[in-house]
Amino acid sequence: MPQVSMTVNGKPASGDVEGRTLLSSFLRDTLGLTGTHVGCDTSQCGACVVHVDGEAVKACTMFALEAEGAEVATIEGQAAPDGTLNAIQAAFQEHHGLQCGFCTPGMVMSAAALLKDNPKPSEAEIRDYLEGNLCRCTGYHNIVKAIMAASGQDVGAIAAE
Amino acid sequence: MYAFDFERPSTLAEAEKALAGEDAQALGGGQTLIPTLKQRLAMPEKLVSLGAIQEIKGVCKGDDGALCVGGGTTHATVAREAAADYPALAALAAHIGDPAVRNRGTIGGSIANNDPAACYPAAVLASGATVVTNKRKIAADDYFKGMFETALDEGEIITEVRFPVPEKASYQKFEQPASRFALVGVFVAKYADGVRVGVTGASEGGVFRWTEAEAALSADFSTGAVEGMARPADGMMSDLHGSAAYRAHLVGVMTRRAVAAAS
Image (cartoon, rainbow over all chains, first blue to last red; front, side, top):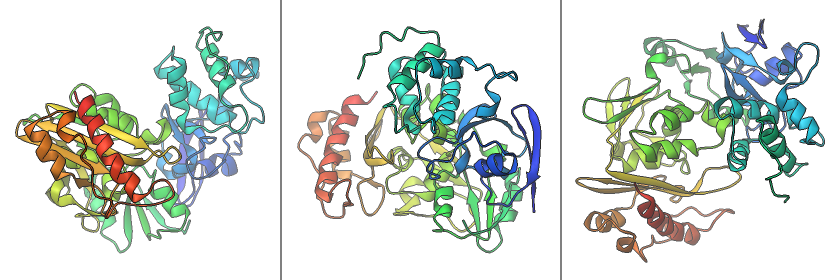
């Protein structure tokens, strides 16, 4: 069985995988990092979004072996080691950007990717960027608010829907 | 998914060798192929990932002024790096799927698969682009052979797509909101020697050139030149998202929008 090695949240990680093992399965089943959720497993819902070499990807639609040697970031690496939430996570909490929480890891990872490239996105840009992240609870409104707040912008301007 | 062997060569030469075996399948960004494998609609003996081959990645300007896009270049990279030279192509790439899909999906993968509702085939055909493989150069007009069919041979790898840059162009997509594929997408490109119109999402035969509109627009590049023009519904796809007649109508509408937006 082939072996794969990568860096996950700054730490070396490796394991035996099959050719068909998805990155999402490797993270969840081999490494025990179950924060990366698998919602649809058809690359539509975005609950499995992680960063590979700094870019947001759907971990259910990439083979583990394709991440050989890559830097992978997952939701588990977002908070500080003492558990202090990062700015995006704290804003999701503050603005009630989740209800059941299933989509939240993907939402937070997508938001982090957006803010890296676009530190002050408009409401329209946030909604556009979240095209591939589905939330069936919130209607997205508070998620957009949280991301606006995490980028240091006024959330009062977002009209209630 | 059925089990398969997996290889990830770092050079084109190694990839050619790996693909020479029976039932070997090239893997681009996997944004279509992996869902297909999950549904057990494909069962290759071996998958050969092209993702580590640096020599087929990137966007550059050719000596003849053409925009050259490496076959392994992601949609996100094209959206960024083609924006100055070929804005209509960059805009098309920027609206494929969603951001995470664009960070993985590649132009070579898209046109090798030739989904009848994919965006890139419309741009390749309307630009009269050249598909360069590890074996030969194929003109766009000879490349697309029908739904999910191309001129590629088994094991042939798309190394580059060369786009002659038009004076004006625009791609207008009527998006199917669930899949984000084109219900109908029209790419209009105006060159010094005439206008080309590529239509995706509409026909049972896959991407096609709308030659009647090309003739009208070559004589007069204005929305008025194609006002009232429509395709016959014969041969158009028909499904729960849109009837053949609806798609035929949209071809006219999206063509006019593309002409109006061309820059």
